[in-house]
Length: 163
Length: 104
Image: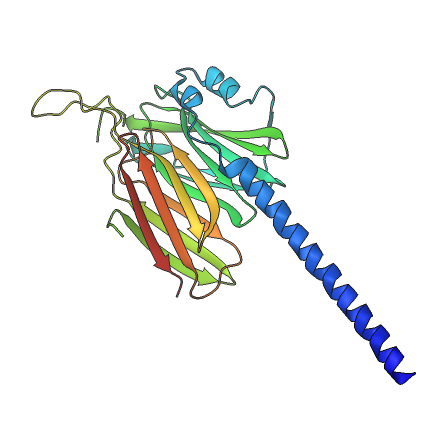
């Protein structure tokens, strides 16, 4: 009798262990498929070569964009040297997959895009070049929709023909 | 490992704060060489991959509008002491570079 009880509890334990393992395995698979869907995208020569901001937006598939205060863009108001304009981007949007950065009046406005996974904290900082004073736009793709925030940066010396 | 990638890292509450500097001219293709008066061809990194150990955690695409010697700051979750952060890059000339740092 005692043996039977032990056996039952053993089987129960094994069963719950298998359950737990398969759950964590499923979690891993969903993370992996996330990575596979997004991280494989290559440099988009069409979008990066567009010379008009509006066309570059269409090229990345952002036909409808919702302005949001859930993306924060930190830049200097005045950049003395357009060759080095520091940007810091933070966001509070759920399920953010991708962050695009545009300098509206650069010869090719799309400057950069970041493909983020759930392993990444919502913060990115980088430095860009700006040819002239212009709006800098950050466009985020989150849960299939596009959101944006913009900020004007005044440039004293343009940075496209410089080093 | 080449010397094109420099790191500064800090691990706090299992979040790795990673600052990356890549030595690269990032030529726009609009700049004139002052000596020869000729246009310097565009030469820029288009793709950067960031790994935590063997897992790809972020992919970055750049245009020629990213500053010379590009700087990048990002934070990676669920990191531990001894994890290795790896960065690889590729440019439009087909050149590439790689760097790694161990979290301490």
